[in-house]
Each structure stands twice: as C-alpha cells, then as structure tokens.
Image 1 (cartoon, one colour):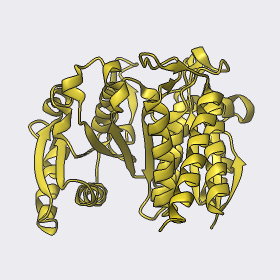
Image 2 (spheres, rainbow, N blue to C red):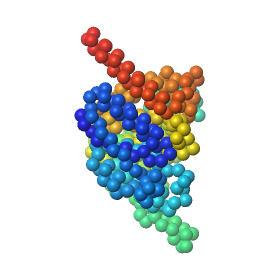
Image 3 (tube, rainbow, N blue to C red):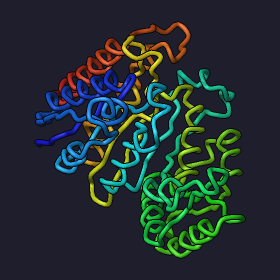
Image 4 (spheres, helix red, strand yellow):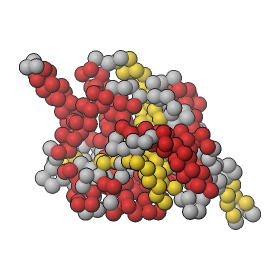
Length: 368
C-alpha cells in the first residue's frame, strides 16, 4: 500500500519526536511491504520565524493533498509575547479548522510497570483504560466575537455550537463506545450553560440508535473529580472543546508522564492529524531527553484510523509495551531497576522489538 504523509516537526522537541515517528513508520513499511513517502512542512513558532505565519498557506495545501499528517509540537517562551495571530498555537488551531478535524481521540491506558510513577495511588489507577473524545473545531476557542471592549477593561469570548457540530461528535462517541466496552459518559455543564443543555438533549435523542451502549451524563466538575478518584469507571468520554482540553490533560497523570499519551484528530472521512499530547518542552530540546513513546503510539493510531492497518498498529503497540515492561525509559519516567536511554536509543529498541515480533510470528507460522 502506498501512502503520502506530511510531517510537521514544529518547535522544541518536536523535530526529535517527529524523527522517531518517521523511523517507526519506515520500519513498518519495510516489515509489511508498504510504501510511505514523507514531506516536511513548517508550523508553529519556527514557521513564524521563517515564513511570517504560524501556518503558511503552503503547509495547509500540502496537508490537504496528503493521506495523513503528523505533528510534533508547537510553542515556547520565545513567542509568548507575540500578538495572537502570530502565536505558534494559532497554527495548531487553524490547521484543525482548515482540515475540518472535528474529533480528537485521546486513549489513556496505564502501563503496569509505570503505575508507581503516577501521583495517584496504584490501586486507584490500576485497570484504567479509557478514551476521551473531544470536539475540536467549535466552542469557546472558535466563537465570535473575541474582543476587548471599554478601552481594554472588559472582554468577550463566545461559546457557540450548531446542532450538527454536536451531533457528529456525539455520534463518534457512541461508535467508539460500541467498539470498546459499551459505556459512554457525556460530559457537560448543563446546570449552567445553554450550549450544554442542547448537548445533553442531543445525546438523549441519539441514544435510541445505540441500544447496546449504556449512557450516563456527568457535569464537568464531577467528571474531573472522578477521573482522579475512580478513573477505571470510564470507558469513553465525549465532551466539547474546552472541557475535553482540560480533562484530557488532567488524565495524563494516570500514566505518570505526558510523554506516553498519543492522540488523533479526525475529519468525517478517514483523514487525520496525529500528534503526541505533550508540549514542545524547549528546556530539553536538542538534548536527546525527549520521550518518543507518545509520538510512536500516535503513528499506531494513524495506521489504524487513516490507513486501516490494524495489524501494523498492534505491532507498534506491542513493541512499545515490551520496551516499557523491559524497563527501557527516558528520564521523564522512573522505572525501578530500569535503564535510562535517550530518544534515539528508545526508538531503536522499539523498532528492534517490532522486528523481533515479526521473526517470532514467521517461525510460529512454520508450525501451523
């Protein structure tokens, strides 16, 4: 199978983890006789410096012509004082909007050898395995007007949703729950917000189409508490943009490191943008300390959701699990009696385990 992938390294550690992601994809192509071609495009602060925009038009056009897109990370203190339209994060918001990537999927699953690394008690985070599905192109982050009034003494941000925007993300939540354990938690603030009341109405209207899915409604503050006190309660969480942003970052403590969490942002077709959840970490950029696992697991999501390559995705996920269980880790993670390695070494170890898994499979097939 031939696929063209746009790689957007971005800022900070973005280029390092993007390189790891590409190496893993190249190994997959070799192992499974696929052909992946890669094209690098600028985004974020680097794009501001070199092109005068956090998202050059050429980047958007290249992404639209690709089969999938990978993003490293954007941002950093260098650009913190830039005006809003020249902030690196503006490039991320705009690429999501331009590519109509309305659904963000963030799986959260703890590795048994890392449960101790979570600030939560091991018995609390044990058996946690859920997915947060966040609406990505509407709500407070995109509402108009956004302005300062009265000589800068008051401000306006607008939370706006159309019915079809809510329906499509809620449907994605139902479908994900149907493929997992059949439990959907819809998170809103219906006791205060009119947008949340419409959200809850739509969930209630749609649940009759999914009789095999159990539905519950949680206010966002209650859901935030339950994520910390009883995360194994959840299977699929579906929620609007800002709530999903906050809850998914909160959920990162379950794994003990943001460096372990992948994500996928999808449109209504199979096209997606894949990226690690972590930020650009400029304080460790260029030092080989970046954890590549979130990026590598994001490539598995790419293979599964955009390319329909579930076996290849499973190979990556298995190799990552094996590497972690064997004690290989970067400095952001603490595994007792483990071995601290750099970005390149951990990437190579995961690729070696992928290839070893292939060899074992071939040997076993000889006896079938």
